[in-house]
Amino acid sequence: MRTDEPGGSERKPSAMNKLGRNDPCWCGSGKKYKKCHMLRDQRGRLSAFMKPPLRAPVRTAEEIEGMRRAGRFNGELMDVVRQEIRAGISSADIDRLVDTYTRDHGHVPATFGYRGFPKSCCVSVNEVVCHGIPSPDVILKEGDIVNVDLTTIVDGFYGDQSETFMIGEVSDEARQLVLDTARATLIGIDAVRVGATTNVIGKAIEAFAHARGYGVVREYTGHGIGREFHENYSIFHFDTPEAERVEIVPGMTFTVEPMLNLGTWRTDLDPDGWTVRTSDRKLSAQFEHTILVTRDGVEILTLTPSQREAGKRLIVDGVEFD
Ligand code: MF3
Ligand code: CO
Ligand code: CO
Image (cartoon, rainbow, N blue to C red; front, side, top):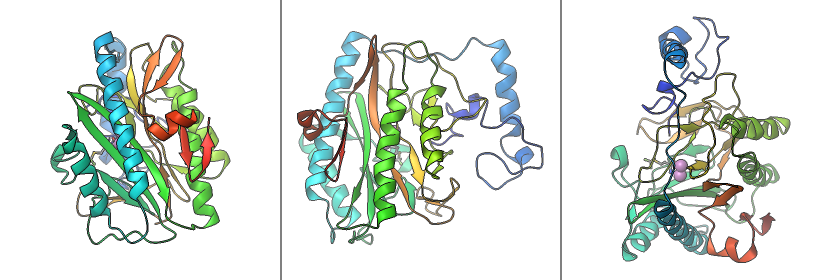
């Protein structure tokens, strides 16, 4: 979700507190801080004293079963896409496959009509960070890296995950970026501990990504998920002294979905209002899983059948991640 959506950082103290009024805003809009997030950040800080800390919704036992079913179906769909994705098909072909498979199984593609999004999944190629709109004009070709983000609704519950696929032979740096982004996603998941606060996730991801010189996208975050697509709290993939801190408790379900860039973390939005690109047009990769916090750790709800079978949390072009 966007960092400045209602329910996103509108209510939260935001990224940097040491900014001057005339500095560029932390969100990457290019606007001066005072013209952009400054007031909202101040409001967030003020309200922190007056309101109890933000609490995440937790799932009942019955809802957890619903989330398991949704995640399982969503994962199954990812393996279907994996079988079909190749050079020569268009991103609209992927969308048609996703839409048909979902509806044939009696479920609902969540992105279709979501805030006006016109398609049933997001397909983001190369320098597109996220929210790429499937189109017959976008033909996948050898050397591309392609993120497919799937969200389905199964009996009222949402499953949300994405993977970045490599089409044929890709450059060494593209391959490394994709593998490192998969690793970063799991490092974020491994940081989840009952009793800690959600900002530990971004801390872990950012430390790993920065050590390798990647930019970490700041304007789009993970999110609580359940009977709603995006719940009232965000999961930051970077660290900031003022990151939203929600206590991690059993029964929470949320996504971890870092976007790592070969260059700058800054992004631009296309005139279509959806397609997000890196500002320097260098490559961007993303992985996403939906997870459930349990008493003794984490259960990944969106494991695909192939991942389940292999006992791995991600498998990227034959490279298995425990
Ligand atoms: N699936 C994306 C996420 O991980 C959201 C896509 S919303 C859309 O949060 F409208 F762009 F499809
Ligand atoms: Co998501
Ligand atoms: Co998603």
